[in-house]
Image (cartoon, rainbow, N blue to C red; front, side, top):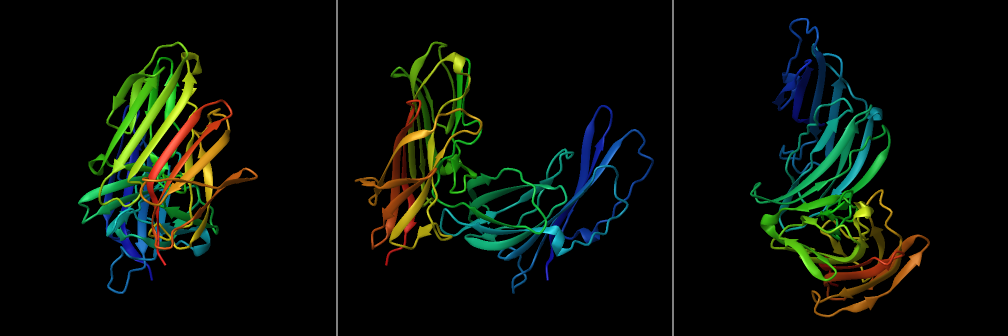
Length: 395
């Protein structure tokens, strides 16, 4: 049976000129008692609780549990004078979640933040779990907004490698969802706001995306990065970060945007990533910059390894949401089995609106590197290289 891991109880108070909250964290909310003292006239009051339950393993620990429950309850009108709530299985959404890993002996924290449209903030409870792991997660529904994160750590919280964020979602009771986190290939994701022009300024930021396009942020104590912008062949500026702000003239010009990141040990995958985009822009083109990144979603195990000789890999042209970036019309992909020392062309087939890449893996295993280049219908071009995109198990 599931047991309490921990929970939080919070009260939000909104006065005419200030708002604040107060709360408690407990190993079991059954040990927490609440009640309102005084009339509270003229004050908007609300209550919330977030709790994590799990079926413990044979040694009584919660981290390796394969069954967890994320429970939330909200009342936007009052402070609870105690609360007893029985949740039926039919009221829960089910998530079958697989969490892969980037590095040997890493662990993960997967908090699920719960809120409502009226919440001032969201809170969550998480416990360190081994990676990789596949588990069944249950969530309360009834209007709750859930936003999940994954923090991959090495050692006993000694170092954080990556931080992954999903979009907020509402889940339906009785429905089964399937999620994969931290799955290769890791490359620039072109999520909302990645590259924007505002008059004479260009703002760029390049979080990676995993195979499901969750934003993956790499902490720079384990990586080095460079972002540079060129205008008509001349360097506008460069920064040792995966983001930058550049001031440019208003007149139309040809631009080249370069991004690179080297991820050091203990990273095993996407150890070197480079991308180059070429586009034309002027001040009147304020809005998303027409950039394309290429996402690969190979079939891999939870160690981010391919186990078959032949791979047919879905390929997606990633562009910024709500942008008018033209569709990709040309796409070429090359593969390398020696960390980029040599490359060979790989067949890419378009089936309907989907691109499929065919790769024959070496029999003795190793790492696969991927290079994609192409252009969109507007003449903007891209070239993207991922060294050690994923691993192949030898036979």
